[in-house]
Length: 416
Image 1 (cartoon, helix red, strand yellow):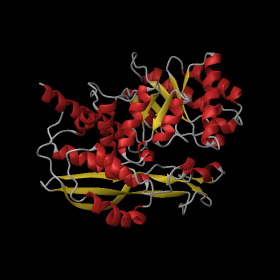
Image 2: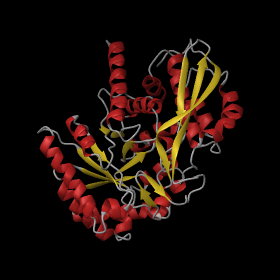
Image 3: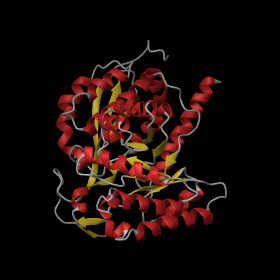
């Protein structure tokens, strides 16, 4: 147990508006057929809060000045596809400054920093406060408690939740740009654990009206691994298709499962993970659809793992998907859960109930939120982490890998 007799308090709360690593996108407008022009989409936004289909992402850094002179911080940020599938509306930093000044700061000042779990719960329980704010405030609290107790963030989590800290780096899924094959090559020579994620959001442009474009893409990935990868390198192949297979096959799960069988043959001998094969109109339909696809894959002997993302946003959603055994993995998308205490508990719930967990997030996150995620990973041992921030792969892997490596070195020195 960490000694906490000399803990300090929060003296002052500051904030700073900054930029996220990526952008916001109105997923519904894209699904409705918005025309792409270079990087952006042309047309009218559909989801509430969007002024354009593509908007720059903004963040608020919550900065905690402690009575002992140290400074902690966490970043308020939301996901790229804000507002989709019952998520909170797009987070615009300027619109939430009053909340920080009038609601958050008065509660933080004077907070004793000898415990993370209880104050995190208290700040997260007001669901009227945007998930992004609850996410950032609880990051800052974890950082502050670790500084106050003179230990690492992973030690705080491990102590309070009674967890064994990982002794090795947690595997990382490299999030790659779909069309950047030089980036793919870099991920292969770096021997990342899973790749390429990519993003397939448009049936016509990314999948093909007969599924031929995704087949070609998967073939290219496999060929490059075999051509330039080291002989013993056996990554898992992960493809995030954002419901496009459901659109292509008009929710005919028999045809969809057959198509996944073709993909599995192409990607063999590498394990294949498919994220969001469908996005249904409701959560219940999503769960039923996933269960039907999973059942058909098992019946046909097709070894493809399904990952739930859309409609599986909050801790209660994750518990529901887990209890229903709807998928093989759930993506625990950190900003969607609000307080990071929910992320911790979601991973633990999955592990206790036979669901594999991807500790995910969004390309729109920051260096700080990503570093804090790496501490959560070491404490909770998910099956893998999504590289973040950004789609660059290199930067996200560097931040997560190095933070985990540094932390393990510190812990090993303490043990010795």
